[in-house]
Length: 570
Image 1: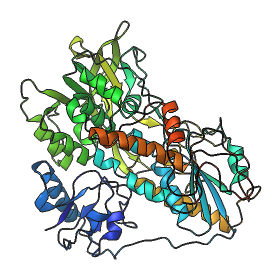
Image 2 (image 1 turned 90 degrees about the vertical axis):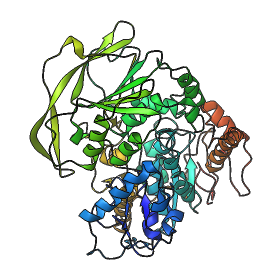
Image 3 (image 1 turned 180 degrees about the vertical axis):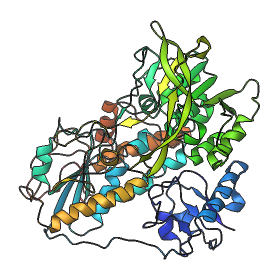
Image 4 (image 1 turned 135 degrees about the vertical axis):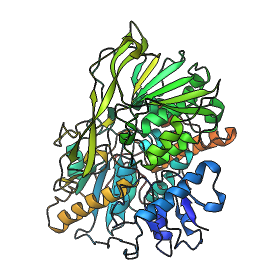
């Protein structure tokens, strides 16, 4: 018997470290680690000990004898990986960076951004003696897209929060949540109070289509839609027209599939997740029966990952169909195109809701007067000329418009969501490259004392586990600068800038977390999210702190106190 990874996993290497026989690849230090869609278990060397299942934070590993029919493709995918990557020449893992003692009595670092990138950076820092880290975020809750971006029907992926809770429990860690840099604190405050600042602020905005009708009611960003159904306090009061029978999602990445799946899902199924109650109520009244997912390029160039496509194909209550299947698809089919070909051959079941994947199509104009009534599109062709992307060393293909638009190419729809990528905002005080949408850096170093990690560093790419290797590189550059004497010591023995009265520390977040979980237990759900900022702050104030010294809210520190924004070492 062998174990199998059954979905997109966090790829953070917890299972790799736990495996006693080095049978999970790619491992840290090996080609592909941090960039692969998932990890793979070598069926020839797996000894069926189950250590990987205990270590996996998202419960992605199963014995092959317990796979469901829908999960069987992952077994074939696992075997196929080792056919191409036998790994017989690989040395045993693990590549574990050595501890580096700081030359200062204490190294104080501010991390801006409490999503996966920021928390992995904090974890890497706290592995070294003498380091304290305060993680800042403008929201009262941490975890970034792991909380507000992962689709609610992917509860297994949300279990990555176990890793983050372990980071929070480390001595030297503190939070200063509900604190916006540039409003409540400033870049100069952080530099004065810390040896270094790491910005891990992600990519909070979306890309625009740049076509007529984009401002109509019913045309919206998938970024905002995802935040709405996940209960993000800035978007939880949103409203979307769900009174038509068709919605269109523009884009063919994982976010596009998430949005399509949620729009087509049975609300009773979603009611067992942590979806926003407001979104759930709206989806219960939805009349949408079909979601069309438009891809500008062809099937071979689709941006969604194979595990997400397999999960979509396995839905047993929704028809998943493919339109515009190209007759000239290359003969060297990939596993992804093989799945798509099988979907293209399916016959729809009358009466079912459906998701239609339509390739080689791009939007030209959103149609409507005061609201969206349709989307005019044109067929595209894939330019066979390839261009080398020097950053990823991957061949990319460009979809070219046919420049012909016919009346029949208008898709009737009441809702059009663009899911064509995230984009970062410039960070005050840091350089910004408008072309890449990221901060220029050298291994994460913007300049000595100022660093970046995550999407603001590399652009919106990679998976949750990618942030781990990204954080390792940034922290290594920071410690190099410390050892070279390039970091300016902070002023005073403790941060003097103090937090504003409503800054939420670690105990405040734990009070919010427990209130949401308690409400969830009453309804048989993982949690019931608190949707409004004021209600979140009230939960942080009213919660009973655990049996430990600490504060629900940050306050201006006195001499010798712990850095504000958290509850001290814990």
